[in-house]
Image (cartoon, rainbow, N blue to C red; front, side, top):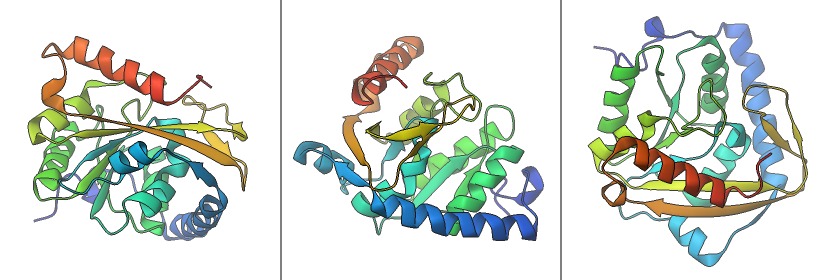
Length: 222
């Protein structure tokens, strides 16, 4: 039986021609990402590279350009899944992730949320890492939604929160103000490990805390 969170019948998918285009873009993103220079402290490197248990990697939606490169540099070799919207826009992102070797779980608050959450929790329990953009798929930008917190609590998995401050970049006029760093530019990376059990029991208080951490590690808002 197919996984309802990844079954193409439950989510928008790309045509063959579109997949070829996305695969080409994927190769460009890989090359582009490898030109970027990262600045990261030893402590943040330790947090980002921890391998003692599966983790939920957390980054804002507009920092996704760096997602595959961060994984390659700091967590390469571990099984890894991206949680991506089942929407038409999400289908393009799935194609891009597949082009660079990252499988996707499809689902969002508007489509397949329960099935996606169950699939993500199971992946964590199986020992795989997962990646979450807590303000996706449609925002508001920089607002930590409950889904990532709920998943981490149920799977008892630590949240590895990743902040990225770009020194030179272009910003799109999309809902998330998507950031595209200039080739060969510098990206400052800061991390924070958060155990779900250490957060306030009240959901709103916990989300406020997570928003505060994300604001701190991402530097000035852009």
